[in-house]
Length: 304
Image 1 (cartoon, rainbow, N blue to C red):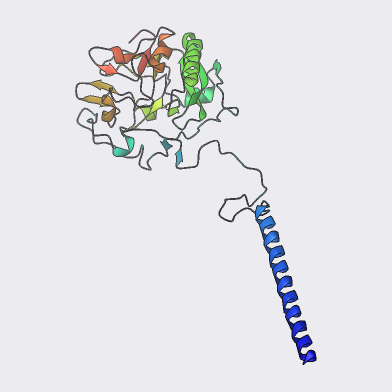
Image 2: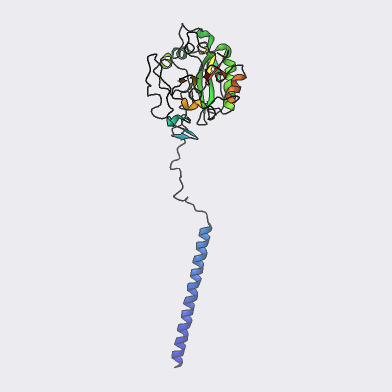
């Protein structure tokens, strides 16, 4: 009987030891797991995007994305759909396509943009290749030697700095550098600034152009006398946002949505805004103040 009792006691003690040991192991495991959960993970969560290559990043001078800020890529049909013209060779004003009612298009760089994103101007005599791709001929009312080739930085609707070019009269060059410096500082957006050829100026109308430019060897619209553009003494800013309007004539023809000047949108020249003030600082009046017609895009040395 004593032997049996002692055997039972030993069994109970053994069971108690095993239970204690199990509790101790469980406690240690929990402590270790807790410690691990408090340590930062050496491997980022798989849901986070991580670089997979150590190759240096290459910045594109022209945005390749379909959207940059509030700007979007140009519709694929832009500049390709020729409008029907009447017997006089002109096209009628039309309803603005939905894509262009609040036009804000990413600028495609045609010249290298400023590397540091700041304003940089250059003024020089007109290179022969630039003159050759412009609308200048010997029949124009200004000599090529009286023109200057300007490059200036401008702010696109995409918010980025770009480089544009202009042909201007030599006596207006320094003043226009000042104008575009002011526009750049004010973040006034410009879509495109490029010298047009005679073929481009006289090509069939698409009604959706938006090139900011100065020199254009052509007469005043509807007249035979030379325009101030033909002397390099006028600048048209964002023609689509700032159309020409006289009676039933609207140029560009698809810019009718921008005849509502009460609906202020980026790139518009408005009374006393950055564009009008900048040109006024060099004494150039604005075509938006004309009474017989409105030429919202137009600024010129003599107001004509």
